[in-house]
Image: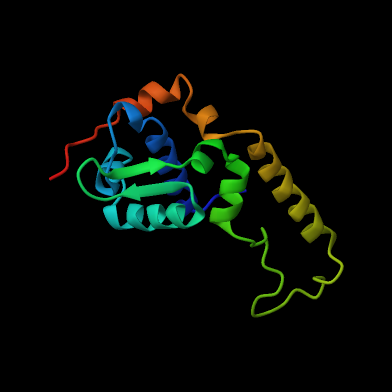
Length: 147
């Protein structure tokens, strides 16, 4: 199974924000720079994470991005499911529907494999992803002061 670039980007943002308490709140631009992605892409990912209730944004002095309680405790499996959507591994319906789509063993096997993939991620939380040795590396990613 391959994740979309959007999901990968959102997961990297969540991981960076999980260790940001030591740096203080980060802006979307700072997170984008820290994980080396364009600001516009990061802004879209942060917006989606806010919509899911994983990230909160505070305005004004001392503001910035932070993880919510949900963002810290949710399983990675849940988060990836939410970011990836309900799509299947193969597109059986499409412009030229597969004649086997009604009773296809491959489609069922791939759906089972997809669920097994998500189930393996259900055992992980953000805290698991940022524990040593990853946490110190994430903290060390460059974060410039806001302009």
